[in-house]
Length: 402
Ligand code: SF4
Ligand code: SF4
Image (cartoon, rainbow, N blue to C red; front, side, top):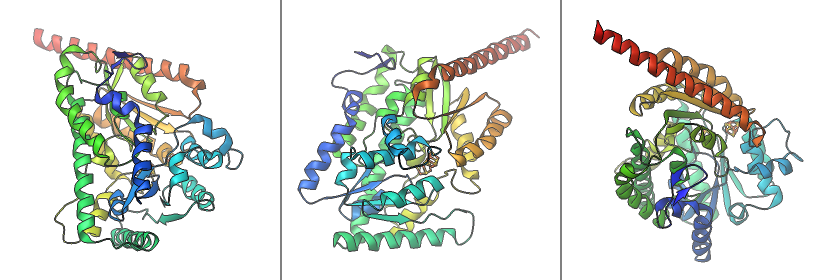
């Protein structure tokens, strides 16, 4: 059966259909395991090492808010000029309407952008919290050592809070599980390299859970990797202008811009952001002599705009645009997200001068009021892409005739 919302193919027994119930899948899993003594640990950023939490017997669950309905309650306490993601996450806490947050035995937060950091102070008044201090200048010689010390402090905090000893063996097992999940997710993302991908960007975005490493998820990923490549012949799911989407993450519920892009002739072949491929590109050595050091290295390499300078993101974008044959780049910035907004000037230059393809920056929030305007800008971008394609074709023809 075709899914009317974004034109993809979602059959009743398919992996896509399974992941459409990602919230209830995650909730069932957590309730079952919490009933058997597992600890629930809320996280809100891809810098937070899930492996450490899992080695402490915890279940890491993403608490990032994607609901526009939670913004208004948050604005009763927070200033309105914060990004929707921060406000939505906090709004859930005021409304007590995120069951994962209400079940959390601990929240592990991090010092990324100022808005998040200060929101965590308020959240920490209601829920137990540990804050990781991220180094801001990754190229400084002492930055990595600082990050390793922060992870050691988290290890001690988890051991103390959950009365458990985190052994190397537990860490190794957690690394194995996470490496397996990353590999499966990378495999799915790489299906989008095909000339006609067997799924849409929205399908891919939906193929996740709020909880890491649920066995049923991993079976579904394997199933998708077996069945999807054969589906390319009977679907037009992945046809359209090839878009590389970068910028802020799209948490569950905040997929509007993705739907606009794919509803107007695009297919998002690569999602460079934190809800896409960026966090799953690097694995952790399972044989490393120092497990904490190895975990720290993987997370330290994540190129987020909160770092200065963030040159690795530019290198990654260039690499991904080639691998995925992007015809244009769309950058999504949640309104008032200073770090991604300022960095967008570097991305624009990179895209236009080095990739030599069109670039579009979309600044918006969770309110749907600007959807029509965004759609017009996306259409105009795709017209530019098509016009360039035709002029390249005709100049090539010209060369042949010469
Ligand atoms: S974009 Fe940056 S702050 Fe946001 S989840 Fe990713 S790493 Fe964390
Ligand atoms: S989108 Fe920007 S402002 Fe919002 S939480 Fe992420 S880094 Fe912070």
